[in-house]
Amino acid sequence: MKKTLSILLALLMMAGVLAVAPMSAGATDCTHEWGDWSEVTPPTHDEPGQQVKECGECGETDTDAIPPTGEGHTWGEWETVTPSTCAAPGLEERECECGELQTRPIALKAHDFGEWSVTTPPTHVNPGLRERECKDCAYVGSEAVPALGHTWGTTWVTDATHHWKACDCGAKNAFAHTPGGWIVVTPPTATQEGSQKRQCTTCGYVVETDVIPATGLGGWLWIILGAAGVLGGLGLVGAAAVALVGAVIAGILGVAAVGGLAWYFLA
Image (cartoon, rainbow, N blue to C red; front, top):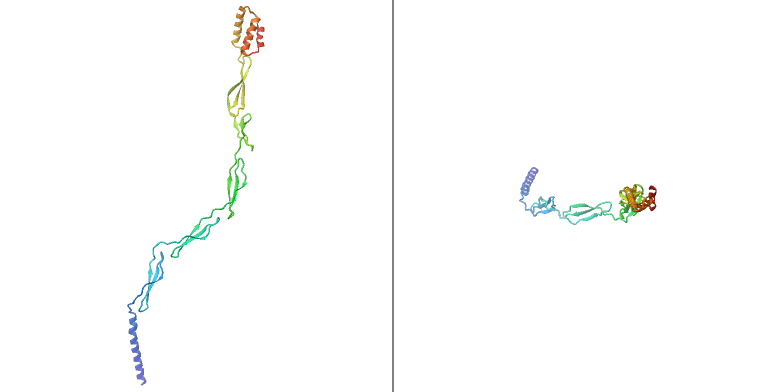
């Protein structure tokens, strides 16, 4: 009896297995009734996204990539992250609708200088120096102050070789004299030497003087003797005639009248 029950129980179990097996085999052969794709990860401009769908019969899921959009970024407005200063550049950024960030530097801020202060005064010859300080970062900027240049006097100062105009600092712009032509100072006479000079054409300094020889009587002596002969024919003879002609000629030549008397002693 027990043996019979055991056999019947084994048959029932086998029958149960056979009954269940066809059902499991049928499940793997589901034709799938897929639902719509559902986006899991959205794509970006250059990265793919991911989507999934589920079978309404067996619950199996399927995934697939969503291609990148391939479009350029759509950037928002630039926003300042770090303001610039006189000493360091700043930073600004903008964001695309995809979430990507782009940054760029902000140029250095210009210095806000105070007034110039002369630290080294200029002279007539040498430049000076002045400085100013930035109110924000204490940076000190500097630049040269041009030399003042000389202020020359209005009159020439001279020596034997040069002429110049002096500055109140003691400097002088000296130039060598440039002699001009001879100028007669005192014309010569028959018996007296004359004089002449040469002056600098710029300042008028007399750079050279010289003597002009006397012209001498020359042919006047013969004129005097001839005239004496004529006067002798007129009754004026000897010393009286010579003295008369000498006085006349001496007056013509600019010699003192008394010089004419000298001819008296020549007779």
